Length: 260
Image 1 (cartoon, rainbow, N blue to C red):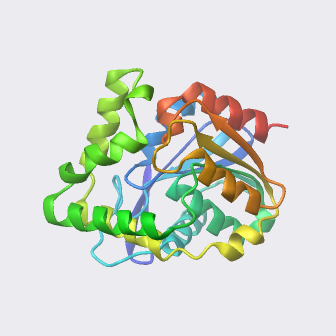
Image 2 (image 1 turned 60 degrees about the vertical axis):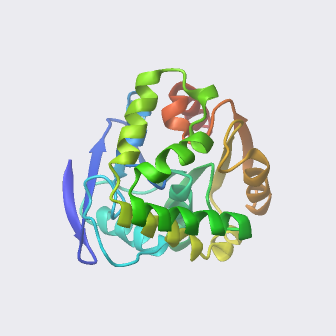
């Protein structure tokens, strides 16, 4: 566990694992590095793993200035300057975290071995744009409890709530978000410009969708996969937060793809 400063913001990160390959895991909007806890035991024998709390999330600093996907990419680059994690990098990003992965690979493609994009949040159509704006405004006005259950109905629906304790833990972490930073994270997606990164992707890429995902349905994720040169695509029997909802299934697909 450690902290470092990136562009004047304190960023919390953790490094674990005993494998020879370097893996970077990037959490979802509203999540923390704890979103990867259940898959760590399955991945650590093969990888040395870096996780971090994005600015405004988890144990990272709660900021009051707007931030962007590019800021998250810069934070990741800053962490890599202080930790011993050599390239080439394997990367996995969940939802908005997948946007960060794409931005990082676009900047440092020569150092990327392969990427897994889970329920990738890379485009914002008119309906989704209004949803993000409304959710951000409501969180700021009334706090996280006003948005949590509506969001979870789409991202963590009852059909994938196999273990009540797992769901309650995830819900508790969501409620613990700073509402202002959560709103800023929603707005950051509105200004993400990833067309160039998508068109220019050159590393191996696997795009995963959740069959029960109400935030990023499989048809939306498949449309992204078709835009990524040479990307593979699969639908898993889970929803939006795959490493939490189906850790064994998720880890199986990640390992099969990365270790070819």
